[in-house]
Image 1 (tube, rainbow over the protein chains, first blue to last red):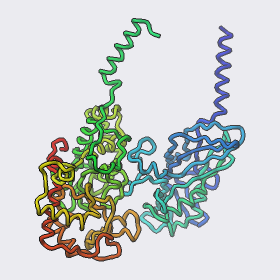
Image 2: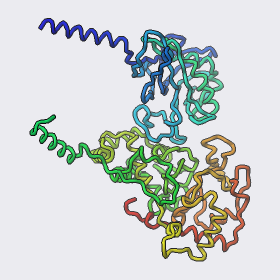
Image 3: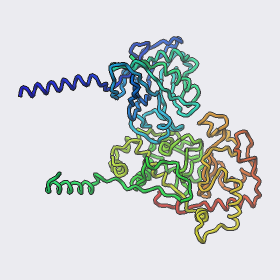
Image 4: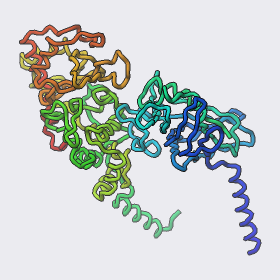
Length: 227
Length: 339
């Protein structure tokens, strides 16, 4: 009987240690100049804009890791709506790529692809009732960034970037490839890098498919880093 | 594998499960249409049609509780006997008397449509329904509230279970059920259709026949038979209403070349779906003909198929209207299953 117990303990230990080698989820955190982001805090961008963020919602999709031997592991049905506001500054991608000891590239899309955008009513993170869907001009909002800044000459100094559009030439889906992704890595979205490139007095409200949205989509890809 | 007793038990259990519905799925009703018609744009494999799905969609279509104040249903502005448009309303009113800027579209043969709404802003019939449900001047609700209401109803939970095998309702099932109903609004039993199919004993009157030939020469490039739309967007030369200032397709694409373009509507059941044009500005087919023959605004965006006013005599206009009346399909307009 004692032998059986010992075997059981060893078995549990073996499974526990095995699980250390398979990543259960990938954390995605928002930061400001590498520090954890705090909603309600005032930040000053390198454009000298003082700003506060109310919320940041974003779709990340089509996750895959490219291994050193060239093998590609893709997440199936890879659509994730990450919602940051109040005290939530870390979200997770519930996916378990089987990572080797060596680092590899991780690749994903910011936004939703055109096939999905024309596939009718979908569910889960793609439920059109989640506030990330334009009915009047069918399509997903790839990301929403809302807050306020004294630099904005708008109602209550609000800024809002609702970035969407899946058709050329106003396509806003962007691919991001990050190197050196390892077992214990996480993804960070450094929002300071976005606001460093946007002068809020000049550009502060995008809520339609437009060339400005395309510009913002390009700028935003810079924010992603592996840590 | 199983002993005799065990086998008997398995068989009995299976029979009970089949009869209790555990294995049953609703019977798929194939989408049917005339042989010589184009293939529908809608992919029915992603939303197989069933009697239960259709009945649920019809119930949702007629339920004013889908609106924010429980007063306006889809059917408030889309009535079957007018080809599912809004009789006698140039612009429809939503909740609290709010008035929109466009004439309620007729809902006919939607499975062939590649886009929806007058500006084509909606790319799939399933998601089209989100627009009227959430639009401020229409039903002004939000999808999650509608889903919450449906889940709170024992009757709806049962209906969704019957239609989709799941009593937990989400927006996807709501929208797919509505689409099952609206996609079923097919019309191909008019006098024109009988003649098109060369059915014995049916023929145009001399006036209708002349009208048909004139139609083919003057109208068919946009209102292309047998669907009577080319599914495109055209500027038909209507002057801009200064109060509405509606630029049509431009509002979606922001391309100057799309200014004043609107989706070409089907002409099926046109005699019953007045008023006409995207803002319902005229009430009779005679006045529609008057526009095309006397009032076309010539501008850069004007349809390539129109080179100024159509040259049609008064008599010829009457003949075209006579032909248009052959597109009336009473079995569609007065189909009690659609109410």
